[in-house]
Each structure stands twice: as structure tokens, then as C-alpha cells.
Length: 389
Ligand SMILES: *Cc1c(COP(=O)(O)O)cnc(C)c1O
Image (cartoon, rainbow, N blue to C red):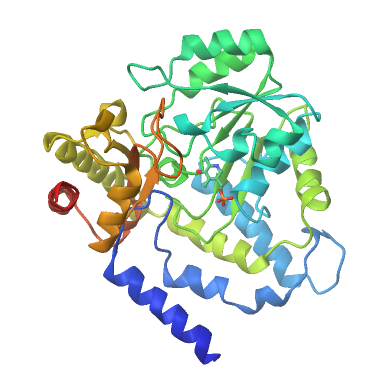
């Protein structure tokens, strides 16, 4: 193999082994997922959908895509005929873009959580294409409790009448009441989209509430808690509105060309793993670990945004209004000692996004590597020691 690249990949492999990944959006996939990802499927062009392709030679790719769709429905306990899934989105951002392209006329309003409160760029933020083609109606968390205030969101929604409301975030640690979001969407006639990118694996494992009973559309990345290859899926409810047809058209030919069939195969592998009984244990352990980590950091004087977590994710206010250290400093200090995190804004951020007030931690990756509650106590101790030095 290409020696120069091989050496760099080896370097990254060793880095991943020798450091501790507390980045909330990362995980370690199985060997089987890597094998599918590194297979000859990368050679194949499969524009279109199973049975309706533009190129020949689709005997196996059709079977792979159909199997991936079946496994996706099974992993989230959905019935064929009630939900459809598109497994071709190349990643989370194009998946969200495809949903808006399919369902929201240009210039209309997307209601999403603002970036500094934990929303994702693709929820209509102005630097994202989603904020240029559509207009974001932002919402946030309550200033004091730092959790979602459903009454406030309802008022904004009724005043602004967005076409779509997005729930599901990138830096929000708590449970989300999807039933309340359904009521809000109904009150203003909006489509309810849940972006479960961060907590999809927890939903599959039964450790976080499922959004499917209430949402019209559910998008997710496949590479975070779900522990698959980089990629994404779009689930849509089957009814007279014909969302699945509109979504399929928006993904291809609307936004993308040929799907990455190696990635689709690897997603199928990950979905089978996520439907297995061991994955339930994994998901429960991820949340149990996060709760211990949050408590132990809090005991040592660090302010946990919203006071705790219900997921794999913890937001720590390391700055504490000037009594502590900035997020960038905290992240750099930890990296020097082999603990990898990301700096993050906190709700009501007063500093810059390049040097914000906090750090975001997640337990999905360390739990894959076998971490239990007792390890989390030690990790909290280490983090505390490093940050206080
Ligand atoms: C990670 C994430 C995305 C984007 O995924 P990419 O694969 O990085 O494009 C979208 N939405 C949410 C909520 C995410 O956490």
C-alpha cells in the first residue's frame, strides 16, 4: 500500500488507541463495519433506487440497499407501510438539506434551536445554506433552567408560523418531550422533523425516548451513538402527503448523484448490531456513564449546564462567569494529557465561538471501549486535576 498514507493511517489508529475520546459525536465502529466500508462496493455506481437504477450491474447493490432499509426500520421498531427510509444521504448535513428541499418552499421559515443553545448549523443558521435558502426562526432554552421551555416555543411558533419545526440537537443534554413538540407543530400547522443524529443509538437501544410516535420526519447521522459508518438516513411517515416520494426525489436527483454503496452496506451492518440485545446494554451503560461523569464533575465544583444529563452528552461551563477557565484553554489542557473533547458554547454565550465558555463531553466512545461507572469517577478526577492545574 501507499507507504506515506499507510503511515498516517497507522498514526491515527495509534492516536485513537492511546487517547481518550470524550467527543460526544464520535464512536468506534466494529471490524465488520470497517470491512463493509473498505469493500469493492466503492467501485459501483448506483444512481437511482432499488429496481429503478440508471446503470446496469445492480444485482447485489439492490439487495444491499433493500436490506439496509429493512434493518433501519427494524432497529427503530417501525412497521413497513407506516414508515419509509432513505439510506442514501452522504451525511447528516445533506440529509437535512434534502428534507427542506423536499418539503419547504424557498424563502419559507424553518424553526430550529439557535446554534449557541445547542442547535445544529443545518437547522437554519445563517452561515449554513439552510439559513440562506430559508429563514430561520430561532428558539432556545430557558435562561434560568437551561432546559427547553415548551410554552415559549409554542408562542414563537404560533406567531411565526414556520413551515417546519426541527427538534433534536447537537449540544443539548436533556430529554426532549416529542409529544409537546407534536402539539406545537399542530398548533401552527408545521411539519415536525426530529433530527436524532446525536441520540439515535440511544433510541435504538431503548435508553432515550423514541421520536417516531410524534414526528413526521426523522433524520439521523449513522456515525454517532448509532456506531455506524459516516452517513445519514431520512425516515418519513407514509400518509397522503407522500413525504417518502418527495424525500427520495430530493436526495436523488435533487441533491446527490450516486449513493456510496460501501457506506450503505456498512450502515446495514451497524443497524444489525444496533438491533441486537447487547446494544441495549451498551446504550443503557452510555447514559449511566454520562450521569456519573456529570455528577462527579459537579461534586468537584464544575458547573454542568442544565444541572445534569439524560443522554450521552454533558455540557460543562468551565468558564463559570470568569471564575474558571475558557473552553479553548480547557480543551487544550485536556488534549495535552490525552483526553480529547471539544470546546463548546453554552446557552446565553458571552464569549466568542472560537473561545467559548464550555466544553462538551460524551460517553458513547469510551463505553464502546468498555468503560463502566467506576471508570467515569476516575475520568472526572483526572479532568478536575488537569483543569485546576
Ligand atoms: C452531527 C449532526 C448533524 C450533521 O452531520 P454531518 O454528518 O456532520 O453532516 C446534523 N444534525 C445534528 C443534530 C448533528 O448532531
